[in-house]
Length: 426
Figure 1 (cartoon, rainbow, N blue to C red):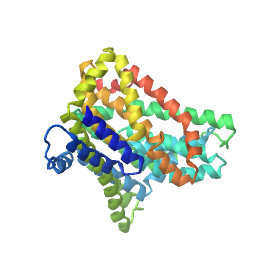
Figure 2: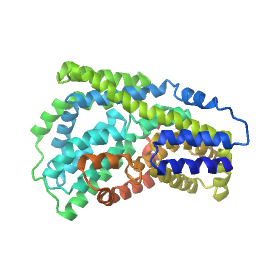
Figure 3: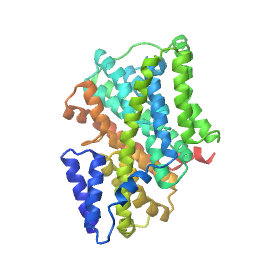
Figure 4: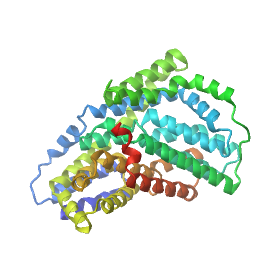
């Protein structure tokens, strides 16, 4: 237990002074190695860093990242946004609803909350400001909708959990569909309420089937990509990793040869951007795996299991405890890091009380998605803050209603398992 206190203390100290999370995890692990009463050779460090990322399923990450980059380099992103505008742009709080629906569509392609938030934010925040929306509300809407990308498949955190826990990534993807839609609709409801309460700009108009039909046919090739991914995996046509490759190839072919708006000179940039995002995520996974391995070697999972079971053996109370742990972790840790660290510690407890590993993973991912918009290190908050050029305290105040509705969604998803597990049983 002494080692755990040492590594956790050093980890939070390093994060507090601004050291990147991956570097903090590695240095905290080194301190744990030195403080351990057991002899652990330091050669284990590079071994764990390398072997933890030597995984075929993790190859899905760069492929889905590349698919998202190809989508944004061409006009696929604009076509999706156009379809979202034709669908909901005519109702009250129309632009806010468009940004949320667009994020839901983007979520089915990139799997990255940060990429989703940046792509939609660059398009929608300036547009919403011109229409008279409060900047804080516009930024908060985009940031909260960006969290859907880690729930609706393909989800990078779900891939990380599937690899760490050894469960079906396809089942995780399927379990995330309905919860992702529920969260998106809840955010739309908050958009409507805030817009009405504060009398923000209201887009007046009626639904036009002709415009909807035109937008649908202009963007249909982009809109069906998420369906190709889901049905391809669930139908056994390809694995999640192969689905990522198919998605990247499809996005390239459609953007370059069908829509003809992807330039050859843009291709190297898309590969570079995808490589940067992948390197960041995989580095965090490797560092978190080393950190988690140290905790496991020190038998911390057994101590945690004993402590949790000492509080209660009731499955529903344990789910509440898990959610509190995940929520606190999400406030300080990147989702991939939190998953890699917490899964080996808490999954045995979950299985011991009869919680399905797929359901446990879904709860973890949904909970950690809220961490993207919770201070102090919510990544989506910093992304929209840079785009909207808004003070952080104003942004935090604007994001509170969205955090509350997502916590409410989390409670529903946690205690009504059929919402998420229904599709996996078909």
